[in-house]
Image 1 (cartoon, rainbow, N blue to C red):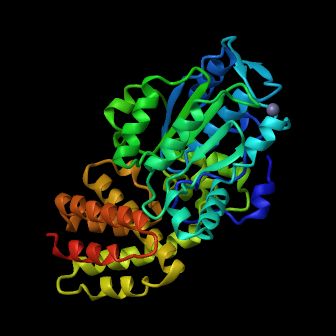
Image 2 (cartoon, rainbow, N blue to C red; image 1 turned 135 degrees about the vertical axis):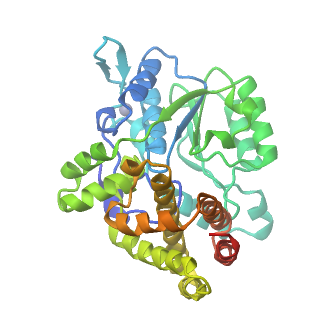
Length: 397
Ligand SMILES: [Zn+2]
């Protein structure tokens, strides 16, 4: 494991798309899960057939960004070490030490890089700020395009930069690699990207990361190859944690195995204490809603969540806990009790499943989802909690 980034920065705990960053694997064999998908991509690189447009789809924390960076390294590595799969195919790897690998690796802590780019923009004159898009580049032939704040969307200016740079041949490596880390595009940006996808220059590889492929234009989807990082089963994650997080108790590891939604990166960085605190509030809130005329609990909870960055993190954690509990209630109501994640609160959940209607849970989940989206788009305010409170209150049990 190349641990120096981890030593430099605390683990990311915010609700952002870079949560999967824990420690960068030193080879493909350290990438957790989805072995067949990874092998196919490595075999494609070994034969010079990495798709020019590739979508990597998977849940938050499933390793999309890590894999994209590993593919970029394997594509650009000066050594490109080879291995063989069990069925005899040649698989490309990366050395992690050459000039290309090391510079690409500097983008591993995406959150820190994005923070740096945003800070640099903040220091500019107002007129220059407008024209400056957030981009991350630690190697001349590899460009990373994160969602641009405050809207956290991929913007036209960013795609224009991609198109512009895609016209030039690579200068220090075999190909030009562009990694777009989210699929929330402004409309003009998506249309503009489409033009590039229609006729990608032969030296260009575009990798698009998404939690939700449905968010992409069908015309974009149809022009891309797909690699899906599926969820790992809870017991596989618990097993992994037994070796990587032996200091956690067995019960905690099993619980986290369920709570991390099959995403290894999320499991390794899981803050159970923070989660259980948020979940306690979420349960108070839900219990308050079930007692008629007692909506004060809800407002008491949200009231303490208002201010500052801390409130922001707490609010995101509350929303995640709410979503997780509501989904469990839905599982119980639909007879899939083996898929309940909050196994330590099963009794509370079973009680709730008997009281509330399927429709109520459904509308509550939509409300939570809307609040979450609102927060991600507008990071400095958590007003969406008010809307959530009102919506939950007005829904029929
Ligand atoms: Zn290398």
